[in-house]
Length: 153
Image (tube, rainbow, N blue to C red):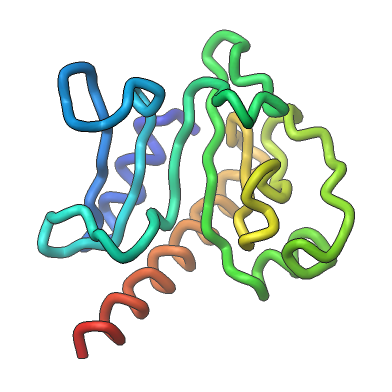
């Protein structure tokens, strides 16, 4: 899977706002080139919710364990939720050992920083995780959509 494959898939789910900060915009420089996906059918970045998925293309100061400094490497991050997180890790968010190698590719792992919040991650998703990633993204989208619909009746 390429970054473009993921962007096309996620935006095709409906009601998705794809935020892709670039130089000169209102977003911090560290976010330039990354992607943030919100359920926002009105096309406005929500002020009361986080993205349901992100793609990061570089190491962040507090998040270097995925070694995104390798050429062409990126990480897909998905707000999986408690139950799905447990299915993939064998423990509740923040309740178990998340000592997996965060730099391994094409493998679903607890997010190295936000695993305690129920996030999963995949560095360079590929053939082995393609179907899984699509399912996780579909579920994260459905959860985000349900939250927005509950808030707005």
